[in-house]
Every structure is written in C-alpha cells, then in structure tokens.
Length: 476
Ligand SMILES: Cc1cc2nc3c(=O)[nH]c(=O)nc-3n(C[C@H](O)[C@H](O)[C@H](O)COP(=O)(O)OP(=O)(O)OC[C@H]3O[C@@H](n4cnc5c(N)ncnc54)[C@H](O)[C@@H]3O)c2cc1C
Image (tube, rainbow, N blue to C red; front, side, top):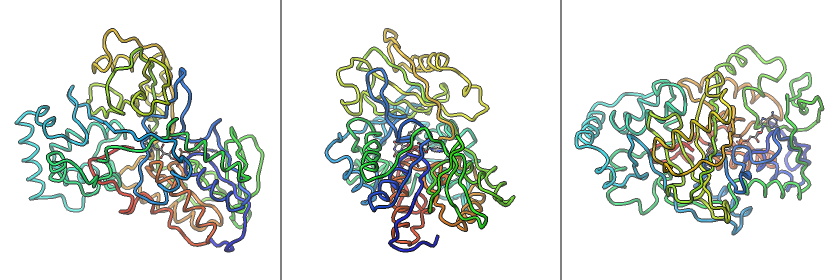
C-alpha cells in the first residue's frame, strides 16, 4: 500500500470487534475521519458482554492475556483500575475425573492408573527415539511432542469436537501457534516443582479481567472513538467493498444499498465473503476462498438456582460422552457480573457446521440437552433447578486450519496485497485463530501502518514466535 506520510484520510472500518474498534479509535485520535460500520446492534464482536437475567455474561470464557507491551499498555490505558485480578482455576473433565490444569502430580497420579502412566511414559520415550520427520498434521505434531498416549487422553477428543475433522486433517500450524516448546518433561517438571516463574503463557494462574465483563473494554474504546470524532454506525452490515475501474478501493456498499466513499477501507468481516464480493477476482482466488471454511459455535446459557456449583472459571470437557466441549461458570470471574443475584449462570459450548442437525435445534431443545449433560457429569445436583435457558448461535466462529489451508490463504493474501488501500485484519477478517490480544495488536498496527506508511507485516501476527503459546494446548 502506498500512502502519503502524515496525511489525514477518510477511513471506513468494517466490524466493531476488538480489531476494528482498536484501529478506529487510534486513527480517529490522530484526526482522520473514521466511520465504523458494525453489523450487530452492539460493539465488541465475539468479545462483547451482555445482560442476562439481571447479570452480565460474555460469549463463553474470555481471559485477557498478552505478552506484548503495547497491547497491555493499551488495555491499561482504557480499563484503568476497573479490573479484577482473577485467580484462574481451570480443569479438564475426562473419564468422569477432573485433571487440574496446569497438571498437579498428586492429582494426575490419583486419576490415572499405573498402566496408563506407564503407557504415557513408554509412548513418549518411543516417540523421542523415533520421531515423525516433518510433522504436517496436528496429531503428528502433538504425538511427536507428547507421545501417542498423552495425545489420545488430552488432545484428540477435544480437538475433534472443536474442529469437527479428525486430528490427522488438522494443520500442524494450529499446534505450532498454540503450543510451543513444552514437552512432557517440562509439563512434569511444572507439575512437580510448580511453575513459579510463570514461564509458560498457558500456565499463567491469574489474569486481569474488566469488572463488568470483557466487553467493558470494547464499550469504552467505542466511547473514546466517538469522543475523538469517529462515527459509529450499528446495525449497518457491509455487503461489499467498492472499487474503481483500476481496482483501487473507493468505499463500501451496505446491505441496505447505501454507499459510502473512503480513501482506505479496513475490513474485519469474514475474509472469504469480503474477497468474493470484490470485482473481477481471478478464478484461482475464488477457488481459494471456496477451500477455506469456518466452524460455528452454539452457546447455551443456563441459570441455576444455586451459587455453589464448582470453583472453576471454565472446564474443558474432553469426555466423548457429552457433546459440549467447554463450560464457563460466570460466578467465578468478577463479583460485578452477578451483583446481589443468588443464582449462577453457566455457559456450555457446542461446535458444528451449518448442515449439522444440532445447528437447527431451538432454544428449548438445546436447554434440555445442556441440562441433561450437566446432570450426567454431576456438575449440578439433582435438587438444583434450571431456571432459564438462553441460546446464542455464532456462525463462522472459528477459522478451520485444515491441513494445507495455508496454500489457498497465501493465494488470497498475495492477491489482496495488490489492491490499493484495503487492509484486512482480525479473526474472521484475516482467517486467523486470534485471541483478543492478537486482534487488538492487528488493530494497533494497522493504524500505525496508515500513520507511518510503513508496512507492519500484519499477516505475521499470531504466527511468529512472539505470539506463540508455550504450554499444553489452550483453545482460546
Ligand atoms: C467462545 C469463545 C471464547 C473465547 N475466549 C477467549 C479468551 O479466553 N481470550 C481471548 O483473548 N480471546 C478469546 N476468544 C477470541 C476473541 O473473542 C476474538 O479473538 C476476538 O473477539 C476477535 O476480534 P475481531 O475484532 O478480530 O473479530 P470479532 O470479535 O469477530 O469482531 C468482528 C466484528 O465484525 C462484525 N461484522 C462481521 N461481518 C460484518 C459486515 N459484513 N459488516 C459489518 N460488520 C461485520 C461482527 O458483527 C463483529 O462485531 C474467544 C472466542 C470465543 C468464540
């Protein structure tokens, strides 16, 4: 992209999630004319918080964590002192047992038989002696690192529930982005001696959480964006990005037919949809879009008439006996979420594709399924009542890293690099399995790219070693 240094621009941003809002805020503060179009009726995207039965909830668990100073500084600049330090407790539910995460040696010994422990050690040693050369799939990568048995216990079921494809078809990139150098030996060392230095990102045992939910951060960014002169347009889904005859971007068209002109467009809408809406795209690019796909999420919120259910912030459910994969307990985050209410809101996560039967189920059916599964896991007592159910369906929630996905993605990326004044960022936007911090960083760097006219290598965020997780795999 070639822009004049220090010039002020007329900029359109598509999407008011963490990536779009951050870029919008920074650019408006510098005096640019910025219009942000958000499809929904509130900001925050997947990281929004909302009122439910007199309490506040997020879209599943939202722990904020970054090792990047500029992201942490930005968080502090916006949230100031209005956060709670949450002592994180997360466990894995597998074969009707709870495994503390990070692993605790006593708990592991109590939960696994001697035979299973020996199998873990044996398959680990075997793998060290004869590793798979150049692992390209998730199962190869994880097996190399942890051995076959540990892969089967702690990775396989959960990953297959989440992605809906066998681990042998998931790209090793996913593991490489989320797990770095932690080996079985390091995990055991952590379990025996503790993880005092907080050396591994995923083993961090506390985190800062905005008092009124993760979305508080984004509501504040939106306020500051508007104070800086930015225009926020809710319920304004963008249909397509407009180009002139030379292919240069000139603005956007909304679903309602209105058009708006701009010098620069930053898009965080689903990458494949945005690209397909461009004019005269070559067949190779179109075919590449058709090769990339997303996974949907179904969130089932249940209000239970008890305040003492279980102590975890969230539980990973590896057990194949139930369909959901994770449960959040909003009672264990910040007291401001529940105030004086004497009930607990739980959120169960299910993952599926558009054609799966479960995607068509209504609120009542999903509520019954959720309740049945919670009772079968004994997470609520027979006497606990489910008072209310709420269903939230999130399409295109996870970009699927099917083995080989980088090839079509790089064709799309190369094509976009030739289009003047169009920047794609964010989780949907750049087809990256981003956390909040990655999307915020993309937003900050996109703004810097426009300000300085220096390429910020936005595509490398959440792929290079700076952003890799070290530790046992963590799914958000
Ligand atoms: C269940 C769950 C748990 C998670 N847990 C964590 C966690 O613990 N920690 C963490 O850091 N992250 C977590 N995340 C990830 C986090 O939510 C995302 O990384 C973050 O919200 C991505 O920000 P974004 O701006 O890139 O995209 P989004 O949040 O997806 O925002 C994109 C926005 O664009 C809008 N949009 C889409 N299409 C259009 C259009 N055509 N026109 C206008 N607007 C459009 C959408 O409505 C949305 O508001 C979790 C996500 C999920 C689903």
